[in-house]
Length: 399
Image (cartoon, rainbow, N blue to C red; front, side, top):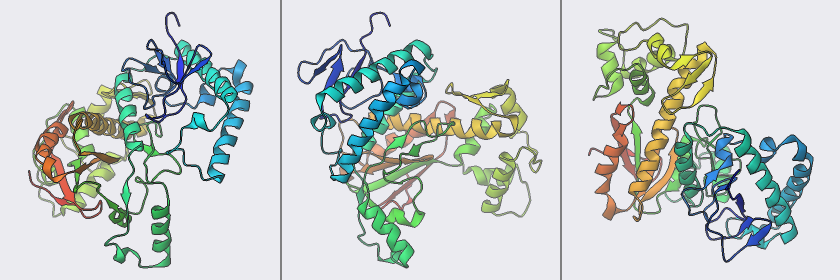
């Protein structure tokens, strides 16, 4: 690795500062010339540090391990899991305690050296992905979200307690973890998933969203009007209608058919993701035009540089969904940068929606945030903006 200095942090929390490097543990005089490690943690402040977990697309340590040291690492991993299980049984919250204070130093030395060897192996055998910088910024944002607990309570939620099944679901949410641990590599397309045991923001019943309240004064929700439809247009090289996309389709694609907006929407998506459907014939929407530009030799290459191996029948689905997800996540990173130094912050991300937790005295920034969100690398998308006092009851906000 030439002049690189590989290291590992001893805990992933920003307030738990400890470093392993060159066979030693450091808790005070931290070396400053560190260059490569396994994964980002909050105590790393140098923006030039590189992360092996991003190079190998989120493989676990065991999956990324070289064959010659796999057995030794598995033994260390079993010991690591045993410590975690003992903390769980003893009800020790690792969100509140530093891992290195709870385990013997000899284990830390062995485990961190193994992580150093795996990190070295990855940097020697994996190419840096084209979208590395995007992944790097996103990993740091998702880390930040992980360490800010949601406000979850049953105030003004009596209507949710309508049967024993609902009551059990509510009880589980109220007594469970309050943080969201997103998995950046949970899907091949780049759409986020959440780690087991963390707050199930992506999979919870919609009506249960009423339990989630802002820590400040308001939730502000931003998403694109017809996000995947607009992405498909952009991938075909066509311009964006600056009106509701489904109303536009009703007039320009479906003509004088007597269909409701919802029927237009359902019919369009049924055609878009069914490669055998010929229900829509339109100059604006040409599947072959998109695939000719972005699909070749059994793989999709998105505008973000993601290369997805996929058969032709699912290629358009992968292309549109992956590109849309990355557009939204790239905007989330930019919005987070706008909010540095402010009390308002990104609360959570749900598929194509970014939800902000905003104070009354900072609501004037929403106009600028909406503008930043609308102007993405594929064009100017129409934005849906909503506001509310809980995550379920969000009403349209005209700005």
